[in-house]
Amino acid sequence: MCGSRGYFDRWKGILKSGELSEMARQSGFRKREPRKLTPRAFYWATVLSFGDGGPKRTLAGMARLASLFCGKPISRQGLHQRCTKAAVAFMRQACESLSQRAAALPKGALPGKLSAFEDLSLLDSTTIRLADRLARRYPACRHNVRKAAIKIHAQMSLTHQQTERIRMSAERLHDRKGAPISAWIKGRLLLFDLGYFDYSLFATILEYGGAFLSRLKTSANGTIVAVRSGCHARHVGGPLNRSIYEDALVDLDAAFGSGERRIVLRVLGVFNPTLGDFHWYVTSLAPEDFSPEEIAQVYRLRWQIELLFKEMKSLCRIHQIGSGKEEIVLVMIYASLCTVFLSRIAVWLSA
Image (cartoon, rainbow, N blue to C red; front, top):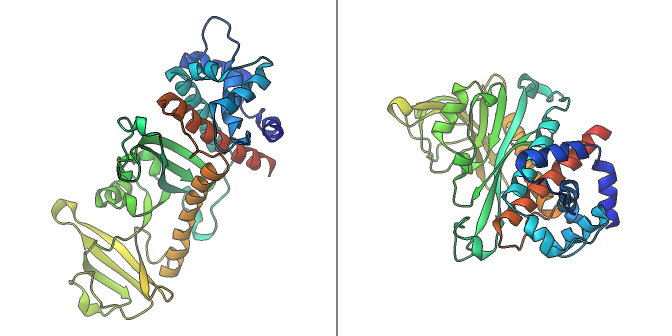
């Protein structure tokens, strides 16, 4: 409890009580009749429940915290009744407000050659196992392992070390569908893993004026159209997936698809002596701007979003949700995301 109080003292000025009251009114969470459990107490009890000290984040732990903020006893049942669709909307609004607040913080310039971009954005997703009774709403991919799972799709800004966009879906939704691309990508460099590998995605990013860098699928067998290094020029016109590479660094252009869907992309290979094989990348970054070694270094920055998910699971215990009620699950997920935003904004402001 003391740890939760310490975090409260550090974070309470970031999202003030008046703002929370207005969000509760707009979302319908705040009713006209006075309630013992105020929106402010509900918000802080859920956000700070990661510090309760128990093995899992539970309604009982949240109720103990709510009682401290209200100065009156709050039962687990009373908290359960308050976890409604309106409560989900309230917590989502608070989460979005913190995300916007983080995005409004002064940006630091990206280092070196990356300063040519307005920002470097990272895409990824993580899944959280849920109670089996939620399998209809959130079906998992592999029923022999788990029946229900929710997927959190995240877009992260490297300059802010903050999550800019969050979307939640069933685990079965493909990563590509969880990351809509539009005008926001203009002037940005986007990094993502093989879950997002899609030629139409690449074309859309270029159409909106963005740039991208991804791992190359082993099954992506394009046609070589130009060679800069790594193999002989006689292989131009031949397939990409052959044992023709002679150097530790490969840099070439390859065409993928056909007809109107044909797209020419830069393909790079960096040999890893430990694995005895190449790491392959595909990108729109120009060879005169980024060498193959620099491409490999830039791609390592994608690990930052993996660290974000690790923070959600280790610090905020976002994966420790045992409830079978959808509204409670969503409230606790949004509360965990609020915790991440608050901690990172506080660090930024104190720097």
